[in-house]
Length: 251
Image: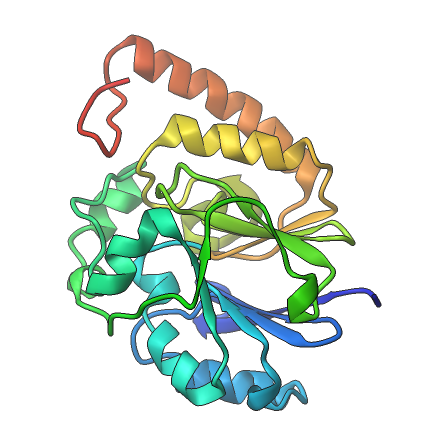
């Protein structure tokens, strides 16, 4: 197959919330933004010369409202099947995020008060249930879906054969992309330690670039250095009994 091109599709601001268009033998969309974003994503991919009816798959990286909020609408607009991990099936089917959100820092605590994060999206039942590593060859992309749990139980990423990692909220740019190129946690994680493990597992595969849900692309070496510091920070918090996970336990 020819090289897969990764094109960001801004959903909010320039990079505050991103979806992605993958161009290979057939186009694939990754993530669907907040509720009401389906038409915007539809129109943006059209501007890139893609007939929305040619989209082979819509991959949802996880069950947060800013990533699956318009998946049902985008499915209707394109006719493409939707893929999501079975561990996030509850949010997809109910249209509601598992709550409470677990902030990773001050930004998350502020954002948790935003009512837009607590709305109900249109429910959907994914056509393709992801349970493990899954090839995208049948959908026209030289790459694979990789389970990367931690941000949510059902978080997934897409790794192309060219080394581009479309990473959802595995990592973000600082302050929701306001400081481009600087790795940071997104505002929330269900399990910060498990997420960091997933991130390091993906970095061990030597991606060439990380394309994230919030902010501009990140360079792997800079993310590795940040991950080492984050490991030490989480270790100290866990030792002090100050690390909360989705199960409500302190790790």
